[in-house]
Image (cartoon, rainbow, N blue to C red; front, side, top):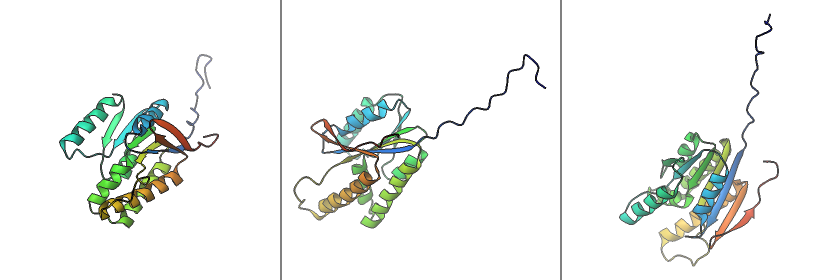
Length: 194
């Protein structure tokens, strides 16, 4: 029996389940896609994990990575993972994850010796991990199929494999954007009620 001064016990209601949302941001080199994606992540109002796939293999890339680090909000968690992006995505503890970028990740896997089928399997695993995690996952990638056919076999293979990965990412996404000269063009609208 409760005394008159006792507070009633309140059972907290379950927190609303977060819906998995995947946003793809693509465009050419220096199109503004990374800045646009960072703006989407910041606009989520949630804690952000920045999942970086670049490797600092030469002084120019080291400087580029340093600039990217300096541009990110200090509160964002940074995870640098050039090969196991799906594992890093599954391990992210924040509601929002920004993976920048699929292009370098595909390049890293190719240069690590993965054949096309294994690489495409890894991409499917990554997209399944994005769909399985509650919250917003933003995927950045380069559109490399708008230029001439590359002369070298490795460059042609890269263009083809990244194109297939990008198609899979676009199909799996809830929303997709193309950046051209800093201007965002919506390719796939967000669904109502998400």
